[in-house]
Length: 321
Image 1 (cartoon, rainbow, N blue to C red):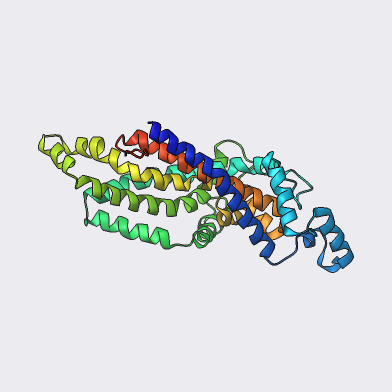
Image 2 (cartoon, one colour):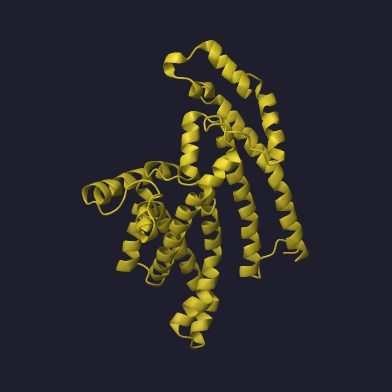
């Protein structure tokens, strides 16, 4: 355990330098992209160069890139992500706080739905390899991965929302109470869950196939254990170990949001906030969302490593291991 603790501490200490590198890269990329944030404050007909220069000076955009970065990073150290350019001088953290819960809701629902469908499909596909069920699941998984989310979202909006009128096609239903509001979650959840179902099902099938061919599974069968006990008590637990990584890598979506999907469904989440900020060239919001998502992903990787040790005692991170 001492080796595991030292490894985890090293990983945690690396988060700081990695975040610094991430912030520098994103900051430089924003500076290199075309466009001028000052243009968001004036109309196209009233883009007087004098007015634009004054706006740049007020925002600090007329300073050199290193000076701009260090001024922003100094505030970041104390948890100040600055003020949004184009949201009535609102605090970036306040905006993120207002938009975070809708994104967590829809992303959490999509992951839960994906797991409820994909895990049984993956298990059945592995235990009945090359059967009609397995072939159907394989084709379905490839189709689910190949379908563009924006196209699938527009298709559902057109047929289920516009032509059939079965489901609402936009917003979170803020003005609707009770169970009627749940229908606003159906379409975005389905769109977000489709590629997850395909990914999880394929990984579950591959992991399960690898485990059920191991010698200890044959030994369990030779001892007379029934097939259900062998699969769900012995094989499934070990097959879920690689799935922890796959599932964990999807969790940062709960903060970053599905940008295109939220924009299509006018979902008031972080993805839509990021989309609007990119269109408006609102630097503080883009930088804040990037750094927060990056930090969440780095910390999550450490948590996954810790979970591995508890799931499989054979795993260790010490030098003796």
